[in-house]
Length: 389
Length: 129
Image (cartoon, rainbow over all chains, first blue to last red):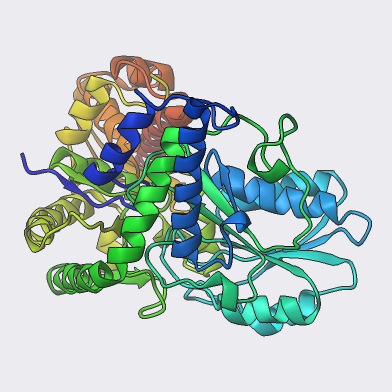
């Protein structure tokens, strides 16, 4: 059976080059990067190179602005909690958006228990925040604004530069969860007003278990892990050398290739969408038609529930998801689609196709061949469908 | 394993039994709502001696919702109304080789759909009498 992986926003397949770069650090170069001897120096050198590669991908002014973490979630935790704790004396108000990943939303909920006040900005029907709302939400107690660069479920890209500029104007720290954006949109943090930016290796064809946080020089942040003085005292714990090397190599390749590859991905994605709407009735596009990640397509199939579509496609070798992998297993409708004002009944039948660099036109043709009969079969089974006829 | 469907659930999801409608149904049960993600409509045909001779369903929902709909229709066919009233959500889940904890409510919905169809049948019968 043909296998088609269209869940690249959940995770990507690690590239051969990345694995190749990592392997020596699991075998011969096993030193602790904090050791002074040759074994340690070799590991340190590899980490420095990786830091340089990540700094270059993000367009940071110095590699010292990059802190390696154990995941994108950890980077978000360090950013949001780290600033909230560091600036406790200054204020306790955080502004975020209603469509953030749980790695930010649940950290904010946690901080509310510690006495922080959190404002969640609303989004429009495309999932975009209104910078005017942001301006209005700012108080003299606001210490942090955290808005995701691009949404994981629908791919909508937020007006980050505008939001960051507003934050800068008020002297407020600005964080962005760019886990889905890195490697898909051009970034240059040094010329932006972004103070903190989270990323993850496994979304850009690197290994799982490693992420990074960009911290602009001078940004006050409290470490969330106490221990040795690894990562410039901001993240204690012996460095995951092989993982960091993998992230570095993935970043180097992303810098070199992704912007070219993105054009092809967008063409494939739009080919898939056009194919779907020409073959299946009562479908809707979730997310912004243009201001969207090049690889993301979220489609709502009216009268249906998403999991039954995912399972049917899985039986045909096609991997997609309903919204986010981190929330499947929850019965709640997607908080992102709900925030966008999508009718609750319609949020249920939404499917995310997230393409990756290995996908081909043949993959899309296979989906277009397999999907319509599945939708028809499920709709024939749906008590809602006849009402829509 | 937690969160994973049993072989039997997948088998009923892949090949659901008794999908459709019964135009001259003796009773129809409607339960659920689209906000929680599950709607079941169950049709029963009741023959002589209160025996359920046919059952069909239409369901909007996840894999478990479709599998429990399929199983409950299988379980009640050939049963009398009093027997069918004893079919519990646990019986449906058990017949499917168990359900993930988070999906147990689907078996509850299947039981409710059956009760609702039987209630509808009994109400119609009362009206006729």
